[in-house]
Structures are given as structure tokens and as C-alpha cells.
Amino acid sequence: MALPFFYLSAYNPGDAEIILDEDNSRHIVQVLRMQKGQQLQLTDGHGWLLTATILDDHKKKCRVAVGASIHQPGRERKITACSANSFGKSAAASGNRIIKRKIHGYP
Image 1: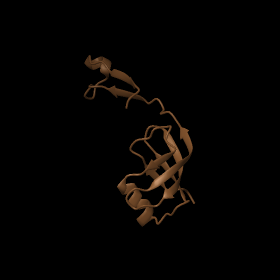
Image 2: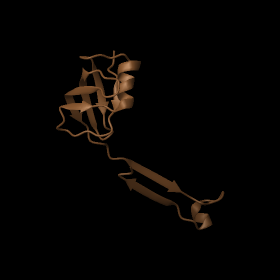
Image 3: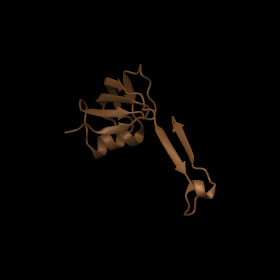
Image 4: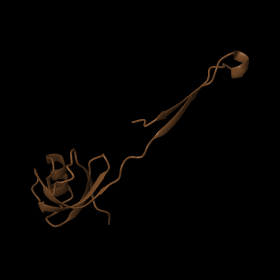
């Protein structure tokens, strides 16, 4: 079975232990009924993927120990947008140019 996956609002790579926010803590402890010693995964949305073990299963401030951490930098995104206004005619016949733009590093 896959480990449960949660979003972490902020992560400092040197942290050995993390206290989770109240929403995540409540979901882990009361909804999923996870207990001390069980593992879960966390991500900060900036490329960090952490495997953590529950140390304190408090429903408002669950404390976890960071085990493995992997950083995967984001991919460079490339988008090509093309626009033409010919209204049924070819671009050359209507005198309009086709505009083509490449956007690199689009967020």
C-alpha cells in the first residue's frame, strides 16, 4: 500500500523533526487513524519529497521525524503560442502576419 501524501507549507532541508499544521495533524490522527511509528510522505511543492515517521500522534500538532529526503528540481517548461487573423484567407493573401512566440520558464 502506498504511503499517505501530505503538503508541507515550508521545509528547511536541515530539519530532522517537523511539527505538522493542525489540518494535516487532524487528518493523519483522526481520519486515517495513524499512530506512532507509521510512515507518511510530505512535499513542499518546491521539489522536496520526504518520508517521515510519526513521533507524536497529537491531533493538533503531530510531530514527525524526517527519514529520507529527495530533492527533484523543477523541469523547464516550454510553451509555444501561435496566433493568426486571416478570417478565411491565407495569411499571405490577407496581408496579416502569423505571430509565433516561445515562452521559456513559464511559471
